[in-house]
Image (cartoon, rainbow, N blue to C red):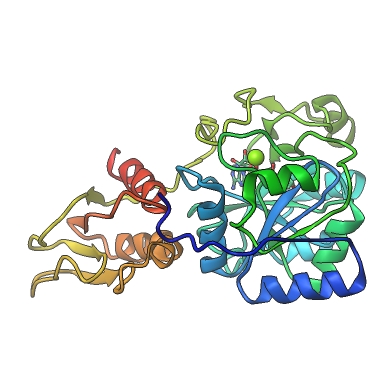
Length: 331
Ligand code: TXA
Ligand code: MG
C-alpha cells in the first residue's frame, strides 16, 4: 500500500479562464493537475517543486523514477531549461507546438527538478499544441512536468474519463479537453552534442520527417514499447544517473571514510565520516524522493570511499527509491 498517499477529492473542470486560474493555483501549491494534450492526457506538476514531482510518481504508482517531459509555452521558454543546438532549433521551428519531445543537455541552472530528470544531465522538453495544455502553461507561467496520466502499467488515457478511472482520489484536478486528437504519445528524440539524433520513442513525427529538416536520419534506439516499468536502455544515452563512488545499501552503521546517506535519523555518522545527509529526518518518503538525486550527487562529489545508504522502507515511493539505489549500487 502507498502509505504516503493521502486520499483527496479529484474534481473535473471544463476549460475556462476560472478553471485555468484555479489549476495554476493548485500547481503553485504543489498539487497535481491532469490535462488534455493533443497526444494523451498528462499528469502535471510544477517542474521546479521536488515534492510535487514525487507526488506524480506516488499517484501513478511507478515502481521506478523515469525522467519526465517538461512542457513549456514556446521555444524561448525551452531555451530557459535546456541547450538546443542548430538541429534542435530547426526541429523546434517546424514541429513545435506539436507531438515532438526533444532530450537535450540541461542548463546548469535548469529549473526542472532533479527528481523529474531522474538525476540526469539531460532534460526532455515539449511544446504541446492542444489549447488546454497551452492555456494551463500560460496561466501557471512556468514549466509543467507531466507523464501520461495513467496508473503505471496501464495504457495512456485519451479522455478525462480514462484519467478519472485510473487516478480518482489520487490527484486534485482534471481539465477536460475532450478526446485527444492524436491519441498516441509524442515522438521522443535525443539531440545531444557530438552524437547523431537518436529516436527514443516512435510517435506521430517520423524519422523521415526529422531527416527532411535536419538532413540526418535519426538512429533507432527505441525499444518499441512504452513500458514504464522498463525504461529504454539506449547504449549511447545515460538513461540512469550513476554515482562514481561505491554505494553500500542497507547500512546500519557508518564505516571510516564513508559518506552517509541517512533516512529517518539512521545511521549516525562517525567522526571519520566524510559527510552526512539525511534524505528525510522525519521518515517522509516523498521528501526522501525529492532529495535523492541531489544528495547522492553532493556526496559523490566529495569522492568518499563509499556512500553508506540507510535501509529505506519498501512501501509507497520506497519501492522506486530502492530501485534507483539498487541501480546506483550495481555498477
Ligand atoms: O505525448 C507525450 O509525450 C505525453 C504527453 C502528456 O506530453 N507524455 C508522456 O510522458 O508520454 P511519459 O512520462 O509517459 O513518457 C516520457 C518518455 C519516457 O519514455 C522517458 O523515458 C523519456 O520520455 N524521457 C524523458 N526524459 C528523458 C531523458 N532525459 N532522457 C531520455 N529519455 C527521457
Ligand atoms: Mg506514459
